[in-house]
Image (cartoon, rainbow, N blue to C red; front, side, top):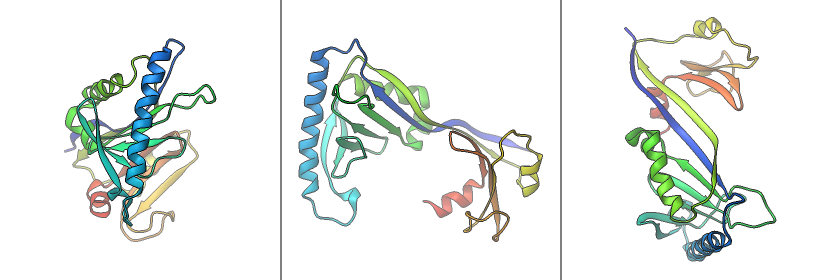
Length: 208
């Protein structure tokens, strides 16, 4: 008997953009906050460690604690992290139309709170920095965990799809099709739209 354990959003990335209604006062306050975090980043960069995750300075937004990291993402001025989310910040400028905030949700944060509550908690943090913005979803993974069915390579051929891309996964050798030792799953599609079915027990054992 097939048992559904979870039906969840387990990956979510949001991008925030200023709008035409964003005031100069909001822009100045936001840019000033980013500059303060950039100063924290400079202090974090002075920390000597081969582990980049250990190079940070503590700070907070709206009473939520974050690590201001010594290394930032491409196109952003600074990155803040905690056990729930990562926030990348970029100062607002007329010279670019890039997102000024990027938020990546941890899977455990989404599972613990549900995506609706998690999004509202993040919006509370963002609202303390800037009030007028628009949000775009840059990435979302919908997940369903189930027990009671052992997938096989035959299931790949039973799926009807217009996608031309199909891949079989094997334990330890995921880059070769139809080769390897233990079958662990398969994927259909590539890029923006993809379905992946895999053995989560094996995945957790490989990637703690």
